[in-house]
Every structure is written in structure tokens, then in C-alpha cells.
Amino acid sequence: MYELNIKLPDKKYDIFIQKGIINNIGEEIKKIYKNKKIFVITDSNVNRIYGEQLKKNLANSGFEVYFVVVEAGEKSKSISVLEYVYNQLLENGITRGDVIVTFGGGVVGDLGGFVASTLLRGIKFIQIPTSLLSQIDSSIGGKVAVNLPIGKNLVGSFYHPEVVYIDPELLKTLEKRFLYDGMAEVIKYGCIRDKQLLEKLLLYESEEELFKNIEEVIYKCCDIKRAIVEEDEKDTGIRMILNFGHTIGHAIERYFDYEKYTHGEAVAMGMYHITQKSESLNETEKGTANIIKDVLIKYNLSYELPDMKKEKILEAINLDKKSNADSISIVLLDNIGNGYLKKIKREEIFDYI
Ligand SMILES: NC(=O)c1ccc[n+]([C@@H]2O[C@H](COP(=O)([O-])OP(=O)(O)OC[C@H]3O[C@@H](n4cnc5c(N)ncnc54)[C@H](O)[C@@H]3O)[C@@H](O)[C@H]2O)c1
Image (tube, rainbow, N blue to C red; front, side):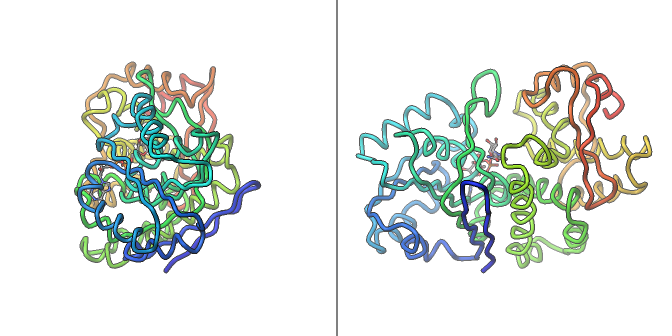
């Protein structure tokens, strides 16, 4: 079992990473939660595969369990689904002393976490992330949100779980596309903070070998995010380094209406492209972009930008809520393992596209 402890000024919590931890989850939760009722928020896919198993396990540990199931997919991170979840929970008698468990990928974690942060002015919650992306990224750091028609994650808050339980065995049922999607973020962590991690990813000879080492891989990613979040919980400085590849990545996602590429696929192209450019501007050690290219290919991710007009990319970047008036922060690499933030004038982004 790998363990991490996140220490923030107003909150401390543990992250447990262990294959098979889901089979003992009721007893694990009992250690930190003494009341009877548990409200599980999950999605239709995860519920179909693991719902009964989780229900039984929690009931065997003496909990009274209620499930709220939303449709799988990003569309569920909406105000209307939010209202549906609030109503379901209230109709089943939730009180402030109960606990919410979010059991699913980033969509369920973000939606359920936002429900927990707002319903009855805040209810404790536990994250059990089930996709790779949620296990290494979205379940840690306290960002919870839903989308509005004009943009993603525009209604949200910072609200941390009581504990995060990560079971990498759950990844065995994840569709391959979502596995690779999560690998893009694993690669990102290696690029910005951990050369050794990236080297290991390059050495694994098969998916089986990756899975053999997956606990350690997840632990390393979570540990990097832990350190960054501890330094800058509210995302006003160094936390932006987690956006490596995201400026161009977000633009690609938006350009294709979030339909053609997953987030990870877009970030993968963004990481390679910006590094190729910064290398040509002598801001990054030569050869870095090629290493990124090799590792992306290995995990079935594209590296070359799709056909897009430069002006349109800039337009998409300008719509990004994270960029303010006339400057934006971009993330560049000195070399593999060493990322840094650079503030540039908005129009200078052309140099990096
Ligand atoms: N809060 C944060 O800090 C943060 C960070 C990054 C991303 N996000 C958010 O995360 C979301 C994306 O998360 P995601 O990629 O996990 O998407 P997701 O939650 O939609 O999950 C992807 C797909 O995998 C399925 N799935 C999940 N676990 C499974 C399992 N074990 N077996 C089989 N199927 C499984 C889901 O049903 C879904 O169809 C986005 O909304 C993004 O904005 C949040």
C-alpha cells in the first residue's frame, strides 16, 4: 500500500493507493467515518460494472447505502444534473452528518465534489476515483466544478475530500482510449517534475509491465500533485505548471467542439508542439521534444497538431478563462523533469504555435 498525506492550512487528508482496496472499502471507511448513512454518487458505466459489489461491501460493514446514478459522460457535469443529484439526495434524507462517496471518473468526482461542497452548506465526502485521469489528477487538489454551456468548470469551488482511496485494479475495465487519455497526464508529470518517471515509462515493454508497476506510477503522480497543491492550493502561481501542454491542448479541444479529441489527446499534442517551439527558440534543451514524441507514440497518443488555422487557435486561447487581460502564463521545460512558468504577451503565443 502506498500512502500520501496532503497538508493544507485548513485541511489534511490521506490518499491510499492499493490494488484491491475496493474489496475492503467498507472496513476502510469505518476507520474514519462513524455514522451509518453513505450516499454514493456514480455514473451509469461504473455502476453497471461495480455498483452491486460496492453496495454489498458497504452493507456488510453495517452501512445504510443510497446510490445516485448519473449518465456517464461530460454532459453530466451540468446544472440540470446537479439539481437532479441535490434532489435525489434530499429525497433520501441526507443530513450534514452523513457522507457522500464519489465513485467514478473525473466527471463524477467534480460533480459529486461540488454537490458535497454546496448541499446544506457542505457535507463531508470521500473520493474513490475509477479512471486513470481521476486517480492521478482530478481526485486530488480540491477543485470541484460543473460546466456551463459557455465553458467548462465555470461554476465550482475548492473543497477537499476526507480521504481518497485509489484502486488501480479498477482500471482493468477502463476503455483503452481513456487509459491512454490518462497516460497523457502521467507523461505530463514526468515532463514537468520527474525525469526518472518518464524514463521508466519509456522502458516498460508492454501494457502488462505498466500494470505491474501501476501503483508506483500513480503514487509518483499523486505525490507531484500533492507537493504542488501544498505550495499553491488556490492556483494563483506554481499550480499553473500542471497546465503543461494545456494552453494549446485546450485550444484544440475547443476548436473541435470537445468532440474529436479527448482532453489527454489534446494535451499530448500541446506538450510536444510547445516544446518543439521552445527548443527552436533556445528555451529548452535540444532533444527534449523528441523524447516527448517517443513516449507519446509508445502510449498511443498523437503528437502532431491537427490541421487548424493559427488565428483560430489564438481565438480559442483568448476564450480560455485562465488567461487575463494582455498576458498569459505558459509552461515550458528547461529539459525533461524541469518545467517552469513563463509570462508572455498574448500575441507572443504565435511564437509557440
Ligand atoms: N478537478 C480537477 O482537478 C480536474 C483535473 C483534471 C480533469 N478534471 C475533469 O475530469 C473530467 C474527466 O475525467 P475522466 O477522464 O475520468 O472522465 P469520465 O469521468 O467521463 O470517465 C471516462 C469514462 O470512463 C468510464 N469509467 C470510469 N471509470 C471506469 C472503470 N473503472 N471501468 C470502466 N469504465 C470506467 C466513465 O463511465 C466514462 O465513460 C473532466 O470533466 C475534467 O474537467 C478535473
